[in-house]
Length: 324
Image (cartoon, rainbow, N blue to C red; front, side):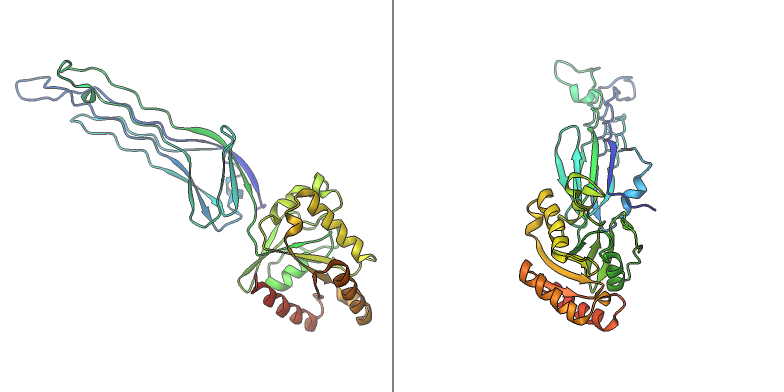
């Protein structure tokens, strides 16, 4: 099932039940006073955060959610039953916007529950209107309609680390090696058309679609990529050693981050030089020295086909994650 990170649907909370006109029946008296009960409250609609980033795909063909109506009042002063509340399960990291009011909500913790639409109040039965001056009231009120709105859901992934870099930087291959995520790998641009997640000793790593120059303006996969790195704790900036100008490649990505959101450019960053098998050991040492000197960032190097270097890289990365 395809990954979906944005969806919109209509919600309507339950209508309140109507109040009713009823009369007490006692022996010898056909009408012994009012006994019409109040209507029940309509069901509310809540958003509930769960750990399932794929759940939005289940709502692909669902355009509306409606909560249950409240029951009408009954005889003998009995109130109608309240309508059942409706819970819409959404991924942790979802940002919800009520398009009617403009209000936004964030689901930041598993199990958090947010009221999206309140059910309508139940109407009043004729017993409510009994008074010394009105002993046989025939008044009643209808239940109130529930709140309604169009809700836009935008998912921002929660991950400890986000793999960033130009297309073909080796991010998907690296994620697969670190986490057995089985992300699709190819030698052409934009193999990764949607974020992939993997677990590395309890730390979540996200491989997100590759950037190109102009991504901050929506080119390439544009904002689909950038949205998902806003909440990561650290960025693993992957640069393939197949690039002739490592520093220029680095600056391209850094420029796109700054243009999209200056706060992204301030996130903790680790440079990961990939595909070390494509150059000599002497060239690798020179490349690491250059990047450390020019960027002032921590620089690691690895290759998915070099078991010794990959084992060392995993150890270094695990140690860094423990300090996050």
